[in-house]
Each structure stands twice: as C-alpha cells, then as structure tokens.
Image 1: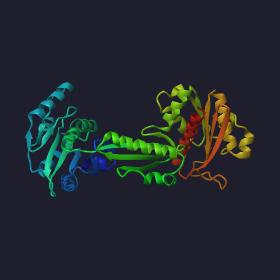
Image 2: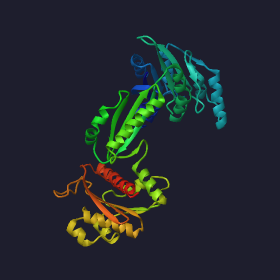
Image 3: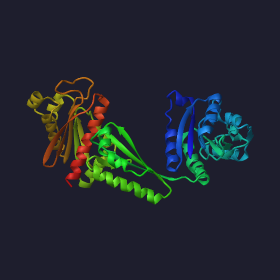
Length: 419
C-alpha cells in the first residue's frame, strides 16, 4: 500500500524549519504496515499544491498532507483543496463548538479568523483536533487506474498532527486496508568500516529470507545494521528476525555492542553500575567528548567522577604528572604518554577505570611519522593498563567522534571480559 507524504510550507524550503514531520510520519506509517513511497516538500503556492496533488494520485493510494491549514492569509491549503476537489467551504457547527471550547479553556474570545477555522470543504470528512483550531480533512478520489486514493490534510504543527495521525488517521486506514506486520531490529557494531563488515557477513546476508531486508547505516565510529521484516504472522516474523540476529551474534561477537536505541555510553554506564565501579577520563585530542557522552546518560554521577582535558603538554605534566622525559622522547601522541595519562587519572581520582586519549585530530599538525588521524587510547583497569594505536581519517570532526566511541567500546569490552 503506497503512501505519499506532502509537507507544505515555505519555511521548510528555505531551511528555517527542519522537516521533522516527514520522518515521524514515515516511521509511524511503516510500523503500521504502510509503505511510504515518496516524501514531497512544496511551497505555500496554489499552483504548486495543485500540481503535487495531481502527481501524487498517479502513484499512491494514500496521500497524507501536513501544513497550511491555519487561520492566517498564508495558509492556503484548505482553499486549494476545495479547488482540487471541486468543492466549496461550508460552516461546520461541530467544528465551531470545538473552536469555542478551546478558546474558552484558554480564556480568549473567538475572533473572526478563528471562526473561519470551522469552515470545511463540503465533500470532506472533518477530523477532530482537540489540540488546535484546524480540523483535519479526509477526501476520497477515484484513481485513473481504478480504485480510490485517500487524501488526508492535517495541521503542520507537530503535536497537533501527531495526535491526529495516531488517534484517528492510522486507525481508520487500518480498518480499510489489511496491512502486513513490519518489524525492525537494529544491530549496533563498532570496530570496522561498512565495506569490511559487509565482506565479513556476506554469506549470512545472502542467506536471509526473502521477506527480510538488511540495510547498512554507517556513521562515524559505528555501523548500524537494520533488519526489516514483513509478514502476515507477527509471531513468526519476530522468530525469523530473532533467529537471524542469533546467527549474526555467533559470526561477529566482537563487533556487536548493542541493539536498537542503545548507545555505547548507556551500555558502559550499565556495566559500571553493575560492578559498582567508577570511571574518570583524561582527554587530549577528544577535548572532553568522552566525558560529555558519559554524562549525557541520566544517573552517570553514580559511576563517573570527572575528567581532565589535558590539551597542552604543560597540563599533561603539571596536572596529570606525565614525565617531561616521556613527552620529549616519545611525543604527546604516543603509547607511553597515553598510558601515563590513564594511570595518573586512575590514581589521582581514585577510580577503578580510567580512559586516556591523545592524537592528531587535524586538519593540521600531522607528520610523516604521525599523520593526521593518528590516535592512541589507553584504558587503565584494576591490575593493568593497555594502550591501542589507531589511524583514522583526515576529518577532524570524524576523528574526534571515532576516537571517543572507540575508547568507550574498548572500556566496554574490558568490563565484559573482566566479569
């Protein structure tokens, strides 16, 4: 069942407002078994709206529209829909009572502009809006190839649209159309890039059932693998995807760190809490990014004691006690220095675990021996300290992000392996 989303608003096209409505609508529709075929963003222009509607009916059975049905002069969607569906606006008493009740709750009189919100196209079915004045509008039109296309116009205000879509539109569409169950499972991996990961799991991917598709969703430091399954039997579909995930776990156990909406900082925090262990960080090239990630998790004060951003050699020496000899002999970006940083944090902050980072983030500062992207990460844990060397890319922002995530994943593995 193909769905097209049409978002109307000049503010979306000039970058003034981010089109979050489309992403949220698509997610809700997909979970309900409806396939979003296209998202179209258009201006507050009569001709543009008419053209978009005429095109949408050629390719979609359901067209969902948001935006342009407010009370001001730039809100022209309702009038344009009347033109497209050869209709006229008529006063709707039920809609007006809702407008009156809304303004009474807010302590304001109903203005003429707000009274006009109760005018709806004669040939539509009005959709109640308990959170605003603009009713939704449900139209049906014969398709050129047979059957009908359903058009639904909703407010562009996100909280009004969301309530209308989940409370009325999707339930009514589900009554009309029998849709399959759709289930997504996301596997989170860290440690190798997309192409290397694809090569490792090629045979597993090729063996997936035809109703389950795999998508690679890479971002700096992490590759998300999304399994999307479709079927008429919900329990059987969940079993299929669970079986595929178990096989993948056996294939790449060292690369998988979590699932769905989990993050490395959440998982690390969970393990630290379980162990009643504490953590501190000494950051040079990451500039406090690791500490920021850790403290973004509610309750992190239970296990995170603090951080030192030791960007200069002076701070490494004076605050962390890194030896001047090590800095002179090996340089700040070295195994020796990063290990000293981690050991110092572990001791001075009296924590069980410490992370230290030092590297050349770029775009400047690289040498033939230590090019941009060179990074050392050390993890100090009870009884040992280990340091790992990495060579990332030439993008400063990506290098910082990848280093922070790599450090968290090293700590995660350490926490898991130490029981």
